[in-house]
Image 1 (cartoon, each protein chain N blue to C red):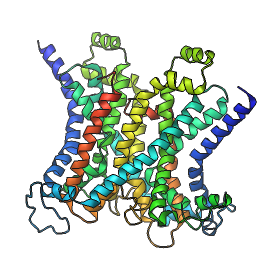
Image 2 (cartoon, rainbow over the protein chains, first blue to last red):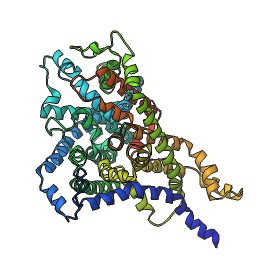
Image 3 (cartoon, rainbow over the protein chains, first blue to last red):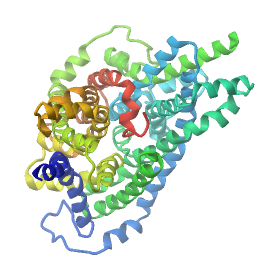
Image 4 (cartoon, rainbow over the protein chains, first blue to last red):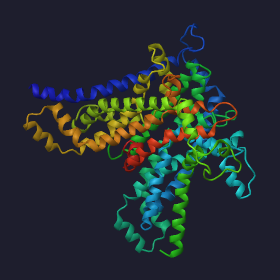
Length: 294
Length: 272
């Protein structure tokens, strides 16, 4: 019976290295963050006792208006970029799905890869250059249609918009590719039959294609929410969260508390709260998007 | 389709292509302009006197060269480690039934949602107490939090497509479990393994937050080096964009290679 026993242990042996690694670098730090979140922990004052303070850090975070503002700003950002990314992404997907013009379509299909591959930090650099108020190309293009130069990164609302535009540039192709994958799942004969029934493009989209698009749309909604909760590189490079705190989304805010204010106790409590949101999102993603697997 | 509709559609496709390419083009064009031209108002649409001077200054004088080497060491190191740890795990998930398999699977996937800042805070304290700040090793290890799940996901998918009959034939030939994995499964799953390795490389190459917190002058990666330019009043835009181009160009080539799998990698296989 040694054969059967060794058979039972084989998957354990195969899995152990990966599981141990993820426990050590993924789970252990999170547990450490959890214990830090119950303590006073000021990095700049290493000799201060790291007292256990119970839920005091959490109470401080939840009672702090700047935390709620950062969170509110994050969801506002989501509300600004997501509808545009979905609408333009859908338009791109529909254009790519229609037959004809195959050379142009192949060109667009390849171009979609460029924004997705561009290093997030470099997207921030490009944003700073293009939205520069003196020699930026955006103001130049606006000038051509008669709009006066805008101090894009110098004012709260326009800085927020400029960052949002760079996010839209980078992530619309992702939405387009996900939706295109959904469109290709529509059985060709059903689509042809609907066209012969003299259904307009809108009717076909609503009644024939939409059911096939829904899983992709769900995936986009959850992943983009998770990604915007993570969004750091682009903002850090483009605006550092400024002017003031106009573009300080939640991940940038927590980074500032942890590494510029050096209050690890408070920052850890914030990170744990963010982690709870993450766990909820993951559950949703798995339940709604992996339906056929789960 | 009528002629007008066809033209309209062609125009829309071209406009969207332009939208995708323009910021990238602008970066490359600016990197080739002279300093005066880069700051000219109104801006010139293409470099009138193209020069590689900014690349020379960035690579040699500003230390971008060594930071690219650091990025390469980290990205290759973490990708190798992710494959070494992830391939057996992916194989086990594809070939065996065991308790908690689905929970394990979902745990791997949930790393896709994890905000790096949640791990970065405590890992900074761990790395400091272990003396790992400013080493390649700390990034190689930390990048596993996102590389390992992607490698496991894509490769498990690929291992499932290797016919089980081949395993059975190999048993008759006297190969053990590990022999089958090493001699049969890995060569046959090579296309998926390459795709997952490219993803792992791209994600690591592009990473900023962990590198910003955990590296100093000695092991600074290229994205961190790019951000160090961003202080002071007179920004050297030519050098900054040359650095950006040097960082982005290699990953763009890789991304074009795996463009058919891009969505699969970014959605953890939920959308193919």
